[in-house]
Length: 59
Image: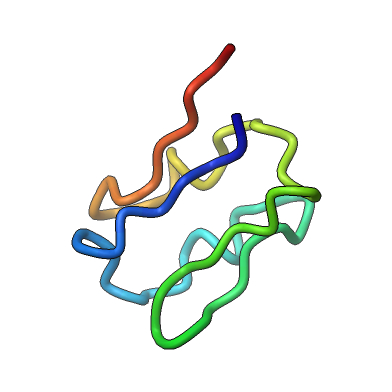
């Protein structure tokens, strides 16, 4: 499954945007938003997120 952002935990820092090798994350209304079609489930964003607001569930 593509990465999911918990908007309650996201602080809008943009660290995940820079960490994503597929450019699948952008900031939208001060929160990270994942383009599910581009996400390759690598979890780089999960490792980079300082608030643990992003999760990737592997199938």
